[in-house]
Amino acid sequence: MSKKNKNALGGARQILDMNAFDAGAEATERNPLLERRLANVGAATVLFYKEPLEIVSASGSWMTAADGKRYLDFYNNVPSVGHTHPRVVAAVTDQIARLNINTRYLNSVVDLYLDALKATFPAPLSNVVLSCSGSEANDLAVRIAAAASGGTGIIVSENAYHGNTSIISEISPSALKRGNLPDHVVTVPAPSHPGQSGSIENAFAADVKRAIAELERRGHKFSAFVCDSIFSSDGVYADPPGFLRKAISEVRKAGGLYIADEVQPGFARTGDAFWGFARHDVTPDIVTMGKPMGNGFPMAGLVTRPELLERFCEDTGYFSTFGGNPVAAAAGMAVLDVIADEQLQSNALRQGNHIQERLRDLATKDDRIADVRGAGLFLGIELSQPGEKDQPNAELASSVINGLKDRGVLIGAAGRFGNTLKVRPPLSLSQDEADIFVDRLADALAASA
Image (cartoon, rainbow, N blue to C red; front, top):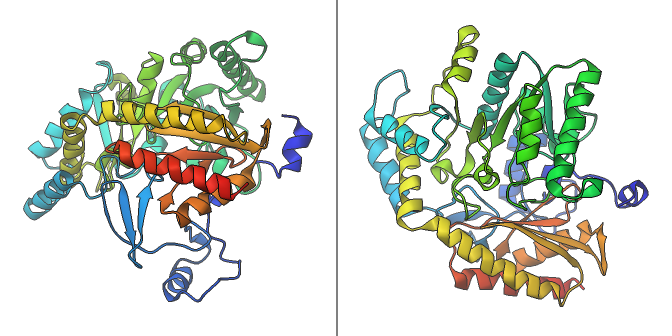
């Protein structure tokens, strides 16, 4: 798409604005709870939808609002094994009734979980540091990379989101409302087109190589390439499997580290791999994780090679009061057990393929569906102007999102222009629920014609 066309469509959109409640808009009716929230949180208030929902309970793939209406949740990847899964609830309830303390004390629950978590990673990644949020995990990862590389230069994708600490906000272009990224951060386009090099793999590697050179030109020693392996905020770009290999080779030739941000694609969501990076047959230097790790209980962490963590700890201590507490470990262990016992990885692949098949059939009947892409139960549905696949249609995406809400389905948006519907239901999704989603999406699209 030309620069002129992009500007005509309003340019890039800040990630939290894509489906946000507008406090400045005229309300259709007075909502005392909404007014209370706005008064309490002020300018930092972030709520979904033109008319925010009051959710009071949830189970499986469904959430229930205060008025009794049920909503199929295709929005959140946090309750990945299903809202209020009874095994997670039981594990957390039992452990908090026994003990909850920090990791300065030995506790077998914590180390049982660490052993089980490590078993999902390549053998070289054998040290784990637990925290409370993905932002904290990514912050620590960047600091470890700086200690190991001796540099500060970072490469991320154009619309990446990696968190909200001071360090990580600087490498999260989609979180910026105004201004530019700092000089030590260079972006690369999402891996969506092969370009002149003939393949997505070659084109993306060439983009990363140019970014490394740009950092050097600016006088910044290259430190790390930080990558969400499914490019969630860029609009979901998963294929072809393996396309990251050449880019990671360029990273390592230049002395940089590869930090795989698995906060969104991790924990079996992509279906054909437990971790998103595994689809590309690469081993990261550091992997960060969060969101679905505790199925709603706040926990996050990173895994890395011992020598990298040791180098960092020579100069800087690290301790998190709540990171790795026994209740979090119990929740995390229950999540791993449920994924295995209920075969949720294979279910994600099966239901994701079913949804993609139905969506591609729908696209043959509606030329505003420009593309359907993704892996497992992490899909992107790109919406365009009628018959013009290269013209993003953020207005249609907003209309469909709110139309789906009216029809009892919750979904979000992604991509530089906010025109890609981001599909992330619980991994326990049934085929009946998958069909409900596609049927109601078709209805919402028809109503927006």
